[in-house]
Image (cartoon, rainbow, N blue to C red; front, side):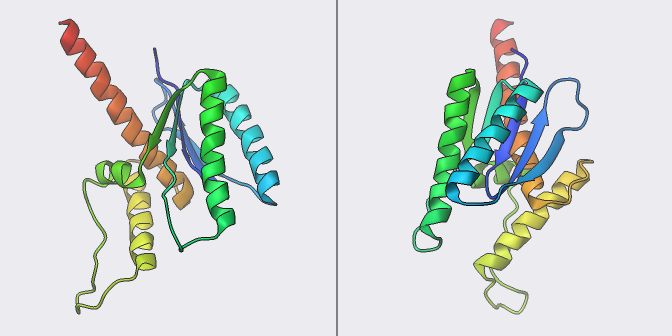
Length: 181
C-alpha cells in the first residue's frame, strides 16, 4: 500500500501536514477552531472528514495527548482527549492506519536528540515555558533547514510528526524488502 499520510498536532489551532509519494514538499498548514467544546468537536470532525477525503488519506498520525495534572483546565483536557478520540473514530470509520505518537519520541528523532538547556550560561534555571519555546523554535528551524517554509509552530510540529512517520514507514519497507531477498 502506498502511504498517503496526514499528521496532526491537535489543539485549538491544529497543525497539519500531508504527504504522499510524488510530493517533493509536504502540504501543510494550521486550522483554527473556536467556540465551545461542542462547537470545537463538531468543527474539528467536519474539517477532519473533509481533509481525509480531499487528500485520500490512508494513514493518520497524531501526537498523543500528554497526561498533565494540575497544569491545565478540565476544558483543555476534554478538548485534547476528545479530539484524540475523534481522530481514532475517523480512522476506524475510514479504515485508516492510525499512529498515536508521543511528542518526545518524534521530537527526539526529528531534532536528532537535541534537548533544551536546563540552565543559562550563568547557571540560572530555565523555566518550563522557556524550554517549550526553545523546542518549538528548534522544530521550526529544522523544518526550514529541510526546505519547508513554515512559520507556525503548529504546522512545524505536524511536519516533524510527519517526518517521523515517513522515516518509520521507510524502515518498514526496507525491512520487508530485505526479508523478501
